Image (cartoon, rainbow, N blue to C red):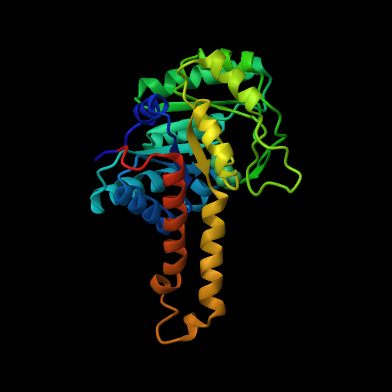
Length: 288
Ligand code: 13P
């Protein structure tokens, strides 16, 4: 099955009161683990690529070609979208050219007029070539691959202005943070989310910073219109923990334990377990 946009899967998720997971990829192992899990659970999936991860993998074309080839070689039949995460204006054009099926333009750090102007242009550019597009209002706190946000809550009226530009999904800051949540985190602002949902109607809302949000908050966010949830750090932590255990147990020193296919296998399995747990929590299992 060729790559699809995120539009149809998120429309179905919003109507069906569940969320589709966006899992960020870093390399072949990450991509393979996420695709395998989506296929096993019969779940739609969005592969997220930050600009830093794109650069690490030598460029967006490498990523798009690898993902398309893996879908083909692995016989993946569930819907898969390949999505730029927190894209700059230039990054969006690069991904459109490279063959992504979806982009995110993060104009949240610009004054709202500039965010509107750039988002408007990119909506036309993306839609002209059949890609879906996510926009952002009110920045996500913390840091992800050099993208730093203050973490303010979005203004519902500004959300409506951006939603009306024809974007396919909208990320709005509601107190969420990239990476681990601090001990004194105030939690998600459901009043803000509710107000945004009322202003933006059928628009699928995106919850960034999915790592470490307690289950009850995830469920409430889905009830209030969130239909895409981004997870990045949690897969990294699962991979790290499993890899550390393998090495600390001295498994890399036994026989051919140094073979990269063996060395990276526990981490890859751990990513699969995390993705499975999230897909079950988000309710996207058997929704392909
Ligand atoms: P986490 O790293 O906190 O899971 O956030 C992921 C994300 O929002 C990607 O845009």
